[in-house]
Length: 113
Length: 114
Image (cartoon, rainbow over all chains, first blue to last red; front, side, top):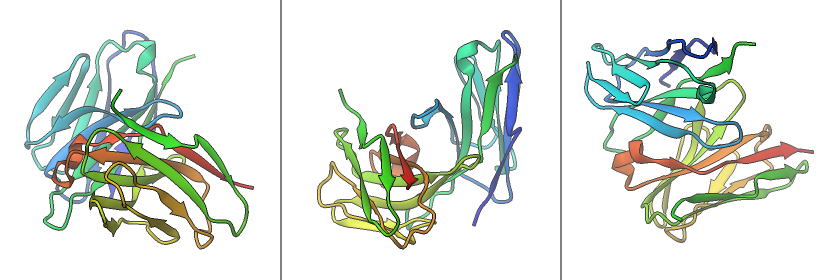
């Protein structure tokens, strides 16, 4: 099946830093989604991208849909402690038989000790 | 408040036992989904339902069963055939299946094997 490679697997942030994570795929997608998951909770949608090249912001978060349709990145600007969590990318290829999301393995964002 | 509820939050299963995880939504969504999450991995789709009385297998359906008798409810049964059931199970719903990107997730159920 389709695979999404998400990197880095772990990321340590210091308050005020800008950080970035990305997802790459061997296949194209029509839609890219970015989620954040808090411990013991379900993921919450942060940003949805629908067109190749699209750049979308949600507060301090900015995500882009790669031109090749095989990648996407998420930037967090001016990190704050509550940015800690697991960030997932997900790709969607619309099909007549039903739409299914393919998820990356997640980037775990932690605070630098 | 509108949302998705999952119960129980923690569930323990003995060897050879079937267990059922509950998922209820009051969002009036047509489509519902079950995902499995393992440490260090992304979510994997177990089953999904586009409409009442209809459901399809996802990528890892073996050892699981579902029913969709009511729009609001989509219970998942983890059968004894599932040899590695320990995981975090997430239920989700979306307005319609064609708008899967609108899906909301429940808080999850953690299943542990005794």
